[in-house]
Length: 388
Image (cartoon, rainbow, N blue to C red; front, side, top):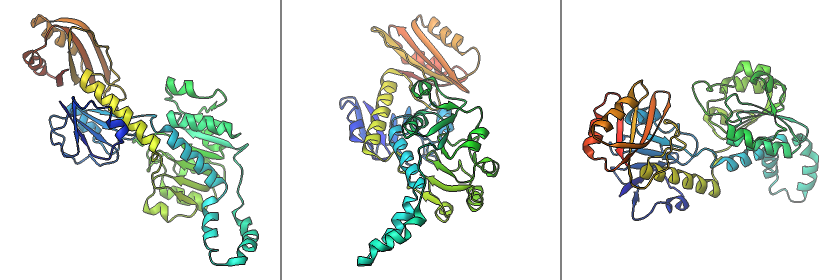
């Protein structure tokens, strides 16, 4: 029986996908085969030797020690796209909030409580200070055209906006979903220099940290509105503060508040609500459970952030073994040699690599015993061997 440890509350809709006769699910399990997590911090957590996989019910994995997991042969899964619609809708909501100055207008109305018959004339007298602009006819620049960025782009077009996107690494899947009316920016500098609205949809990495800084703000149109529903840290706070003071940024909306941002004018902070819908939580839970089940029962890897996509359909009458190794030359030949010496016939084998690591699925005719697995584990640069 597989043991699943949950570090956060996971949607019951997803957990129901675990067969009760094959899986034990609890928060207090000490020797789990897999861990399901949402936002719980795992970087200082001791990872037990039994751990085969971590499933993140969401896209970001900043709370997971990915490199450490890779070195121990622990596959880290996420759920790209499962919460895309929820985030997209919040981005669109943020665009309306900022364009029409709604937060400030709502706060003003709260100051009128108790003024009785004076409320209507006060509203008419002071509403002018909250006048905004319309989205129709404005240009939206998107940095990143993944699952969320593509959905924002398509819906912005439906609102009558001109949309241009920049993403040198756009996937084929995202490209297929993108309207042909979305213009392809030749570079990010041109994109931000000509956009009335800018929405960020890239992960936080060493390359994207501080992506919007003093240099980039200096290239923008005055009165630009910026939306960050990706990760905190992508926008440099100090440079943003100056850009607001200089009249370059009219409004900055983020889903990742910090103390500095909370004390800035013309900044709207939302408490990380991007994926906080019932539907998104159910979608993420269902998707990550499917991936964990397929990995534990079949050895297949789909949507891993540290190992390559690698799947192989199982054939009746075969035994499957999976192998994680460092991505160095000669490994496949050594693996084949072990099976040959054990007189085991390889029916089908797939080897995929990504950066420093490789993953192998091998289907063998007959039985694979622990002795064979142990022989493979003795090979230099082998990280983990599992008979599935």
